[in-house]
Length: 427
Ligand SMILES: [Zn+2]
Image (cartoon, rainbow, N blue to C red; front, top):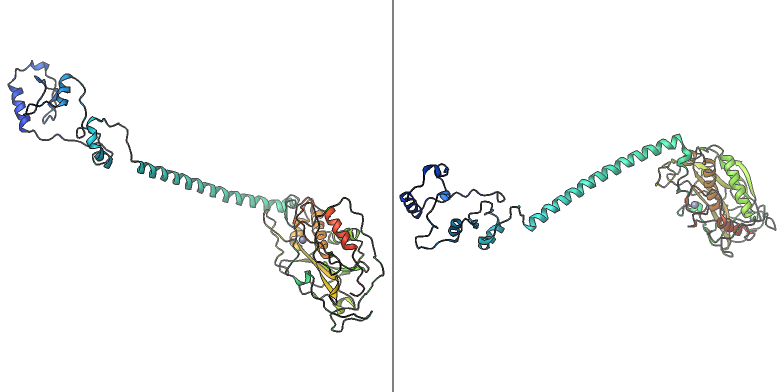
């Protein structure tokens, strides 16, 4: 190949060389023992033979190399004489005219382009080799982490329940969880339902004063937001002058669920001054189309707030994926508002829909009770009118931090405002 030294065979003997050899043969011979051993014929370079003087051309000129040779100086190389010269190399060919006085270095030289592409090839090879190792490492790490995490979920659920994950969303697209158009219009006489049968009589259990007083808020905070804006106050709320009834569907409930719900209810009651009445268990299933008025099931009044533990079959959002980094919706909460003649917006009923599988798993952790209770309180906060806030120190933050298990000062400020709303005798 071009990088290998070429074997340069000497040219056939010229007439001049033959004549020169005859002259040498005629010249007086030194003692035979003084003649160095000659290589076997055809000896290409008889340079070791003694010469009477510098060799010359037939025209009488003496080449420089012959003078150097005779004087014992190192003979300057020439291009064709150089066995290490890569004659087929384009660069060497280009350099031939200048090479007479140039001794090529013994090191192999590659063209800059060749060196560049070889370096590039090595770099690409190193990069993809490293990348593949990184991918293998990440895949193995993910498998290992998932295996450890799943094992911990069953062996030590308290550890896994402490990490942050999405606590709840309030179902923007769900009509049952949001204020809706009034189901009736026009003033209703006390004690009579709406003409179309969609609303109970106005003012059932209505009092002429607030039933309770919100507890004083420790500290002050602006970290609160409301689900809806009222017609005559900056929020939509339940009527504070009548009790809020609630029922519980106990199916699929985790351990201590009754106690957890009772605690959440009393926590919201303290913060708002609302009076809650437990109407006991129900078999009603939660639904996005839940009617606000169900006289056959609940009598001639607004339907009570419904607490229900739902499976994933009932609510596809309720997965049981507790792998860190994934999002699991633990609950949905909201209420339905009505207005009378476009005024007096008020919530009349709502739903707290809880992820039975995920909360059931989390309830076995060391902090399981507090975690499940926090989820229920958060959803009940939505029901009475609180929206999410970005502040992670509040219970109404959109994601569960694992450390916040109770309403913060912002949450409590908003709850107190909701409880201090106007009486709604027309609803
Ligand atoms: Zn929420």
